[in-house]
Each structure stands twice: as C-alpha cells, then as structure tokens.
Length: 353
Ligand code: GLU
Image 1 (cartoon, rainbow, N blue to C red):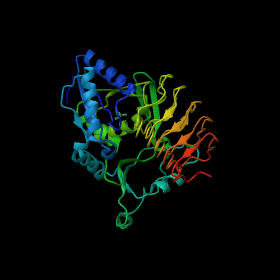
Image 2: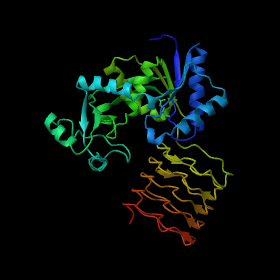
Image 3: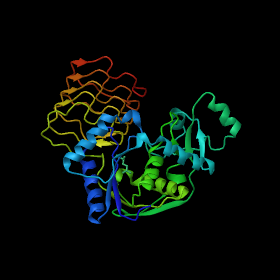
Image 4: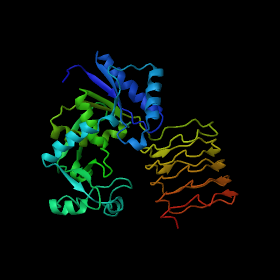
C-alpha cells in the first residue's frame, strides 16, 4: 500500500461527460496534485450494457483534450470481474451475504410506505432461507447476492458537508453486491478498486454522499483502509441550460440514470428524439416551456419515475414511443394544439388512466 496521496476520477461512461463531471475531475486532480500526489482515472463501466466502450473512449479523449494527465493507464471495471468475484467470495465465506430471489415487482410492492419513489429498503424476505430452500429456488431463478448490514450508525467526516451518519439497516437495507444477471454492483466495485489502487482521497459529486456509509461498511469487512472523502455540490441534478436554446441534441441525457430534475430553457421549441430515454430517476420538470412545439420519438421512454407532465398548449406533435414504459405516469392532458401524435406515444404505461 502506498503512502503517497492518491486521488482519482471515476466516471461512469453511460453518456458524455457533463459539467458536473468536469468540476469533480478538476477538484480531484487539483487536490491530489497540490499535495504532490498521484492522480488516477478509473472507468466505472461495471454495468457493461449501459456503458459501451465508445463512450469510455470518448470520455478519455475529452479529458485528454482538457489537459488532464494520470499516472497509470486507465483502469476499466469491465476487465475486473475476477477481482470482484474474489472479494465477493471472501464476504460469502465469512457469512456476510445471502442469495435473494425477489423480483423487482415483489421488491416494489414490499417497499416501506414512508420511503420515496425510488428508494426501497429491502425487507429481508430471503435473508433466512435454508441452503436447501435456496438451492431449490436457484433451479428456476438466478439470485442476486445481498450484503447483510448492521443496525448501527456508521459515521464519517466529509471534507465539505461535515459529519455524516447513517444506520444501514434502517435507511438503506441489505444491498446488492451482485445482480441476478451476474454483473457486480457499484458499491463492491468502487470499494475494491479504491483499495487496490491505493486511493487515499475521494473527491466526487454529492449524489454519492449517501452511498458512502455502505462503502465504509464494506471497507471494514474487507479490512481496507478508509480514504478521506469530499463530496462537492455538483452532480447530475438541476444543471441549468441556457434559456436561449431552441433545441437540444438528440439523446442528450439518454441513460442518465441519476438525473432527477431538469429545468428546461424557456425558449425551447423541441425536445428531440431520445433526449431523456431511460432517465429512470427523472421525476420533475420545473416547467415544460410554453412555446414547446414537439416531443420527439422515445424522448421520455423508460422514465419510470416520471409522474406528472403538463403539456403546454403550444405543442403540436408527439413522436412514437415518446412516453413508452413511463410506468408511474398517472394522467396527462393532451392539448388541442396537438395535430400529430404517434399511436405508440403512450404505450406500456401501466398507471395511465
Ligand atoms: N462512477 C460514479 C459516477 O460517475 C462515481 C463514483 C465515485 O466517484 O466513487 O457517478
């Protein structure tokens, strides 16, 4: 283990880098370099289907263009399955994990009612299965692997937000280390890689502040040292777009799974095809601009948290599958101004009445 101060930037290449990413990268870089330390780049493409190599390469090219340098070749999480498996096996051998056979639908229906839309504390349905019961269920369904978490407050000092604490059992629940499709979860991968890369300081967006106690608990179980943490008020949320923009590039926010809210430019005329596809946390628009004329195909497809959308009376066209699979969308008023609407615009909306 190195004693040299070591920082890192660890983007998930599910889209192009945005300003929040660049700010994190700059602060992580300056913090490490100002101490004479090392700076590393890690490509967090553990969720391989969401992170094609071309986006990872684009991210490396963009950072290079901006003048960043790193002290080791970039580490790709997608190359490290065996390393994660080894650590998961250790946790399993020590009795910290269990297989979970619950489907997504079961998890949602069992969610504690006082929690938010996207946050579900697992109710430990599979926590006490016998080995024989688990083996029987495994014949028909591959399990996810969960970590048992303690009923205790886990605290840490954040360099900017100060003292933070969370009770994992109450606020988070037993969380997933490996998905049922075999992909390893972000929490395990990040903890393993930070330790093996000798990372001593983590500077990243505040959207991960609340995940840090999970990572501290994993570090404790694996005997890894705890880096210093600084979370900065930049992330995928609420990034203002200039008001004079009339349109946006297609697929601009596609697969930005952490994006929760967007303020669209006042002058926007078109939401192009695929603009918010699979933004599964997107819940709220401060406004859909008055003056908006078209919503492109697939624009909001797979926005599974979107509940209310008010369409302005200037809208004239809604493209195919624009709101497909928006399973929480309850009611929507199509303004009289709409003259072209693809018949698949709202297909697969289970809550729409
Ligand atoms: N990969 C995460 C992201 O792009 C950052 C993880 C981290 O810095 O620990 O949001």
